[in-house]
Image 1 (tube, rainbow, N blue to C red):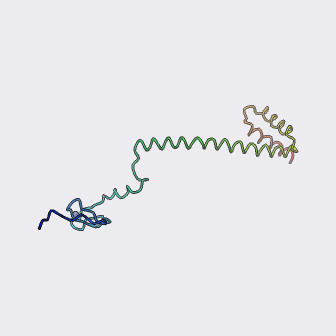
Image 2 (tube, rainbow, N blue to C red):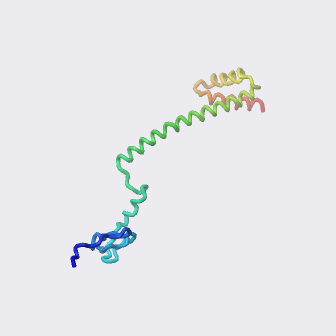
Image 3 (cartoon, helix red, strand yellow):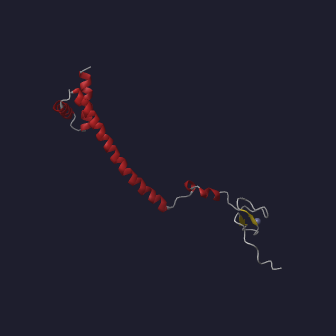
Amino acid sequence: MPTSLTPPPKDDEIECGNCGAYIYHDLVRCPNCSVYLIEPGEAEEEHPAFRPKSKLALWVESVMRKLRGEPHVAEELFTGALREAALFDDLLKKAGGDRSVAERLIEYEKQLSPGATRLVCIQNAIRRWERENS
Ligand SMILES: [Zn+2]
C-alpha cells in the first residue's frame, strides 16, 4: 500500500504545519501535537483598525484629512454668510424694514470699530438697538 498518496484536507480542514495532521480549521490548537496554529496576535489581523499602518496608508490618510478639511472651511464660511443674512434680517426688522436705516446702523458700528467684520457690526448694531429700545 503506497502511503505517499495522502488525501487532501477537506474544505473545513487545514493541515497542521507541525505534525501534518488534518484538523478542523476553526481549531486554534492542533489536537495531535498541541501546537498553536494561530498566533494569539494573528487573529486581530481580521480587524483592520488594529493593523499597523504603513507609511503610505498614513500619507493617504493625511491627504484625505486635508481634502476633507477644505469643504469644512467652506461650510463654515457658508454658515457664517447665512448667519450674517439672518442677523441683517433681524436688524432690518428692527429698523422697520428700511434697508438704508439698517445699513446706516451697520456703518455707524463700523466707524466705532473699524477692524470689525460686517457680521460683528450687525451684531453690535442689534445689541445697541436692543439696549436703546428696551
Ligand atoms: Zn499538529
